[in-house]
Length: 249
Image 1 (tube, rainbow, N blue to C red):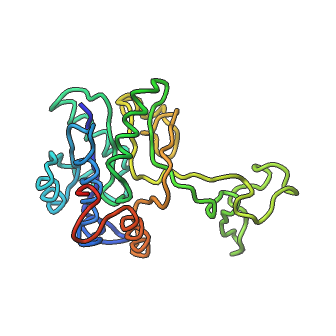
Image 2 (image 1 turned 180 degrees about the vertical axis):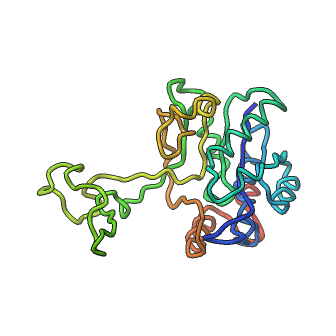
């Protein structure tokens, strides 16, 4: 069994109602659902949520519902804990899966073919713990990060010495090489990554330690309204329209 797990809660402070917000005529959560549905290798899809609207959307797309406990549906609750709860529920209902495809209701920048690529990587490379989508964002290099000090002024967030000799650094955003961020489109993982969560690398410990990248561009999990145009642009460029999807071509 290859189990896709989609997580999303009802409450959101940064962008209330984001998971069901219409994007190109569909709820945001429908895009990861479509990717799981049209994957050639995913056999079961589950949604972990406390939101009745997301539950109904899941049922209409053939997903099995996992009701998320109230303690895991707060602003303070961690996504990793929601994944652990969902995984334990799946094992109880269906047995231990071969692999898990971890998705998020607010991460629409994912395609079925990318999910299948990640599953294939795990099957072909036994030393790999996970395969995750990663987007290149050199403009957000740690070299450029700042924090406000006690005097209200900007300081480097990371000491420049961390990057080598400060005399060799410059303002070119590409000077440190390509900077990749796990963009939350998908994490295809082995069950051991959930079972031994504390052994994984921060900040997304469910990815394990040997993480294979699935490069793409423009991926993100949507937390604020200002991100909507970028997500719509990504979807449009990948063949989504209000009246059709690339899966119908």
